[in-house]
Image 1: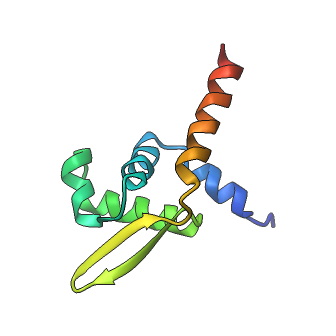
Image 2: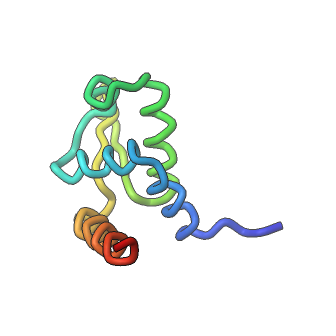
Length: 94
């Protein structure tokens, strides 16, 4: 049986455009999970699944605020890392 590494989880987490978009939104600061569904035009259950996957990959963290769950990027360097990955990808494709 193959072991799943953290890098594999991060790769899976970044493999969907909506999850990448969620990370970009969180780069602007903490937000309630309830804000994503209307902004992204998806069902709240999709948002929950995607945030859970991002959390398992160590990319986001959550905290409870009453009945709301607040989310933020786990590391403030993450937006820069995403930008750099995008640059590397463009360089390879061109």
